Length: 154
Image (cartoon, one colour):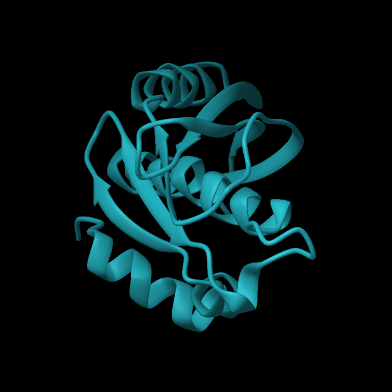
């Protein structure tokens, strides 16, 4: 079963309802990148009339995590995934529709391959950049993901 934006958006309704209510939506996913958007609205604003940083973080993390889920599913292996660390930089007020893009599909491929090959956990840093409707960067998030192939039950 391939992962599509529609399936990911349905997933958020049931598994990540706060992200769904805040307007986090997947627009595109393939083997190399994932694009997630969120629009500044009343429900996701901060007192300074821009988007709350945590809402930006949800959208940014989802762009990396959805790509990770897709790659794990394609591997056919049982692999656990976990965010172990993150960093963020905010460069402009987030208003209007913000688009987060992660281009790290090939990094995931290498980490999964090494995890399967060695049986050891792997970590990788993935980046998601948020831009507004004018193409101006408003925030950049880096997430450190940990991967580990699950042991088969005997």
